[in-house]
Image 1: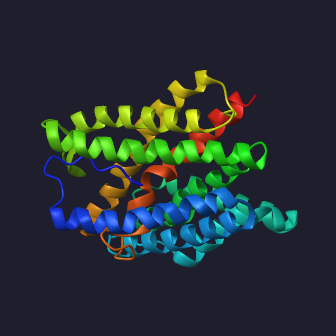
Image 2: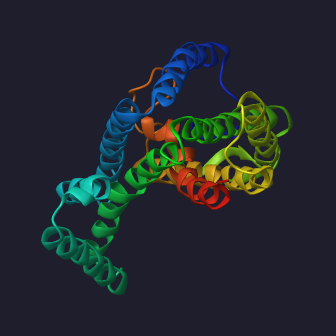
Length: 278
């Protein structure tokens, strides 16, 4: 689901391999999204944990690896913090905040940098996926599905048009250091793809749960936060000196590669839709 604004593009065999995996995988993901409830939450939680593991493995290849057990504790606090008694949750959250403030003040220290890596692993992806579940639970079950589908189709539309637009017209580099194959031309085409994704959802839904005025900010959010999430993941992979976050998905790399745009877009889209709910 991460955007790829590439000027050169993939070879025919690589693109075929990606499509052969992506189509049934997307169909399965949409089916689980339609079901919602425990099925959706279980799938997203599993994806989140695997993504946390991928990010952890990336940090292990950098000079400042994370403190993985702490990252896992933070992840579980985000997902199931409401199940913990206050006498455990509040002190634990206070310790995380205090450690973060300490790390910020002494950010040149090696242990401070390791703490920020720990936060990246434990917070970044889990929070994004958690907000995706919150988005699915907005309104009625059917309304939550349409809202979630709109986000998915906007991201997929942004991804596809950015790829083909960048391949055909890409000349000016978007992020030459982190992602040298991404172009501003692809970035611009991504807006059209996100608009197409929202439009499709709008017309196939009986009654879309939010007012039409929400379309413009939603498209802007996905078309800016998505690429930013992609560049963030690319930057981490470049520091770790790897091409993909893992080889879990045939032709697609890892889950962090596929969901990097969604991770950063989901929280903003959730709060936007919640504000515009009928």
